[in-house]
Image 1 (cartoon, rainbow, N blue to C red):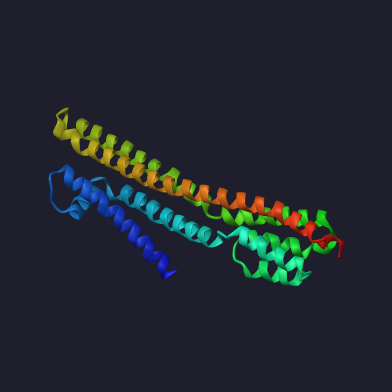
Image 2 (image 1 turned 135 degrees about the vertical axis):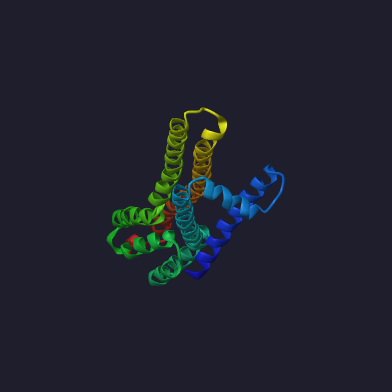
Length: 241
């Protein structure tokens, strides 16, 4: 857990420093961190803080999913080959131990299939399909929260935009003048909150798409291995025992 939060902190700091450097270059130099801090305050810290919370929580869920999916990635060809070797020697219990000791959803599905080997191929396929649905749910765990933060971040930015424009019109009504200095403050708040909200959504969307592609890859391997697994069991006459 400590390593996870350390990785999250490094990611946030890297993004922050990268953004601050761009802002500093745009202004012709100066302290990047101070520039970012200034923009954060000028963009109305109430909404900017909410956007920052969305970034931090969204990255936490993304990093947790990426770590989990990397651990769940298994060399399915090697796993199926080891199970095949055990079944060829008639060692069904040994094949079950191989599947049980291997990490990842594919190995868990094959273990459930081996447990039902004595009930026939239909029972094995039913167990694989049923437990495959369970593993799919586990792989997609937490994605709904990432989607939520992707949607909320720009909404908060747009809300800050609306409030900034309201402040600009309030200043016009109070002063009775349409000079740039009167409306500049409110418009700046509007633009800054929108930019930060969109940047957070873009960052989280990139991570989200990577996670989805990773899940699709694992699921594809699961389906491919499950088909080959039933063939392996049939070729080794497991269903006749």
